[in-house]
Image (cartoon, rainbow, N blue to C red; front, side):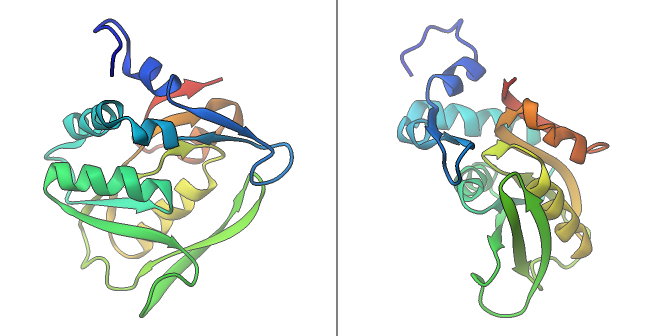
Length: 180
C-alpha cells in the first residue's frame, strides 16, 4: 500500500475494487475484489484488521464460497485456528447438510460436511461482500443447525442499498467499506 497513514482501510479497499457491470446477470454491478487480493499489503491489512477484532473469540472460521474462502482461510491461518468451507451444492464429497436461499439474482444452495462440528464451536462466518444477506443468513443458519455457535459475520465490503444487514439482525456484523 502506498497510501499515507491517514488513509482509512475503507479507502484502501474502495481503491482496489473493480465494478463489473451486468455480471452475473444484466442489471447487477459485481464488486470484484481481485485487485484487492493482488495487492499483498492491502489484502494483509484487511486480514490483520479482522484478526485484531476476532482473535481469541473464535474457534473456527467458516468461509463462504468462493471469495469468502480466500479471506476466511487467510484469517484462520493468521489466528492459528481451523477453517470450514461453506460450499455450493454438490462440491463436497461425503455426507453433507445444506440450506437453500435467495440471491439478488436467483436461488442457490450451500452445504457443509455433516461432521464439520462436534458442537459448541465458536465460529466466525466470513465472505467478501455482504449484499442481500441471503447467503450470510443461510450460512449462519446452516452452521447453527450443525450445532456451532455463530459468533459473528465479517466481510470487507457491504452493499448497504441491498439491506443485507437486516437479514442478520441480532448478530454481530462487521464490514469495513459500506457502499450506499
